[in-house]
Image (cartoon, rainbow, N blue to C red; front, top):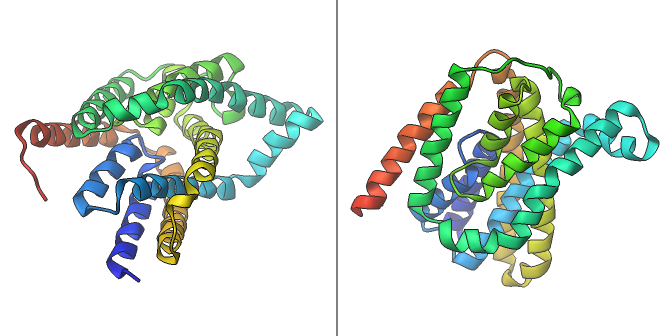
Length: 274
């Protein structure tokens, strides 16, 4: 058993768990972490990313089980609040699923590189800074108060997450805030929106490519990443919910801008830190 590989898998799981729900781009950080550590072969690494993303989403399902169950059963029972949330999530998920299935592989081939990540980080940081400096009037305090129209708009904004460095969480949270959704409700809705997108894509990817893992070590690495990402994401979710109740996202705006500029500098000059 390659213990160094297991350690790298755990680190990747931590990176995913921490960054998946912050507005700083989990994909961008995973690309950089993978390059920094020279993590695994590309085909195995790509499938591994599916595992750790599903681990992070499992943390959302665990933490918000009662609310999500209410949304699911509300679609059948007709209970108003649950049905409204369920319909909102379904409609908001459709755009990225359609665009992702149609253009996902093309985007991955063209834009999964350091420069794209850097530009996405910088632009996203500027948008977050602007929204926090010019906060819209809040008209939806709780996630159940988000209108169907607002949910569809948030879903359209989520399509931007296909671009590396943009951040799915960043796009959906800030997009929702621009529409008048409170920071807390926007954050929760972003959590929930990740479920159909990541689980759907993850299951399809696993069914298509599970044969890539041919040894016990391969699957051990897979499950180490999944478990570590679940635990780290669960901790992050609880910390983030407490954070947004009292503070804004300005720190993430500056983090994105500064880290994006640093990455862009190294990418354009050919300098390497590793």
